[in-house]
Length: 290
Image (cartoon, rainbow, N blue to C red; front, top):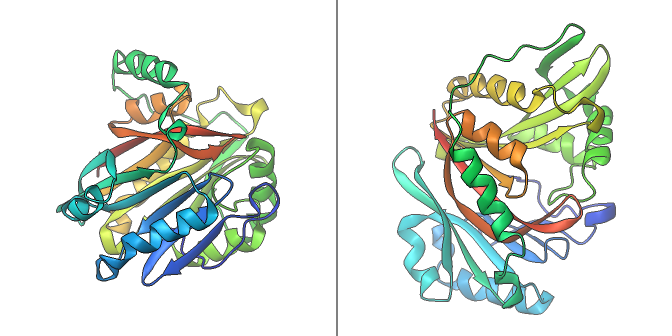
């Protein structure tokens, strides 16, 4: 969970905010034109339902997406929410989790790239899940990033993403997440940072999001995302993580293939969910038991 509170995103994502409403952590803003309930405190129910509606109506957001326990779905469904993805045993390897959504615009429900995304999944599902041990070429190395790497990290994120749902361009934000619950990994060509990813760990729930994958354009095709994912998974057992998951662009054949081949299972698709790489796109949710 991105737990930096009240941080306004800079530059392209100036209007987005991460804050607590009651004890519930919420991310919202005009960039993705939505509210994302990242961590629901059930003691905030049922009043939280009305507060989310009020926030959406006040800011004219067209979608709310909430990551919740499946056993809490009834109150959301009775207030117009629909489930778009389900992850078995998501919370502490016991309770199922889901992404449940409410739309305030009919257009937001329509994915113009639905067939493209479906075609990508159809092609991927025909492939084998066998993963070859990838090796880095001579001159490249992989390690956990540290605070001294932050300037180079934000530079990579600037180059790779025209827009992003969290303030990864902000050095203060990267530093704060490092101090809290995010572990970043990078690949270097000698002293040059060329690829990045992260583990966003939810220790209280024994799950983690594998996220923030970025590879400089001129270094794509080298299997760096695959290498980073495998390297990060080795860390999960040490962290006590039971479930790994990701939210990947539905239009990205490469990233979806990477997770499929590494044994991840599709949980569902979040329609028109995230402004990433310059436009709002649908996102596939993948999960894997560790």
